[in-house]
Image (cartoon, rainbow, N blue to C red):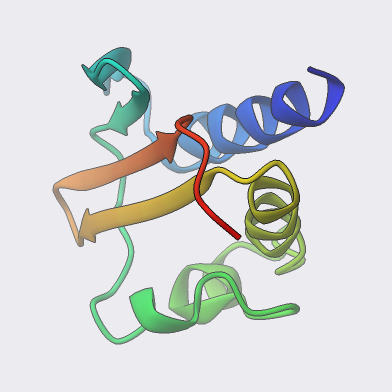
Length: 108
């Protein structure tokens, strides 16, 4: 419970940080065991998406935002794997980001 809460806080913190005022953040069930957090923020560049879970990677948004450490999403992926859950992100620059937390147990 504690570690899943950490992941939720990190994802929501990112959504708040990268969604300008007037934007929206939605939390809903995509399917019975998949929680989706969607924002209308600045989005993530397509070329950065494959690397966003790498330790220390901040991408083009991290260069602009000096507060980015590149540790948050890395820790989220590690925690979700330890909990036998999944995390997946879809994003488009200027449109927003969707984070999918698969809460079904995956086989190890």
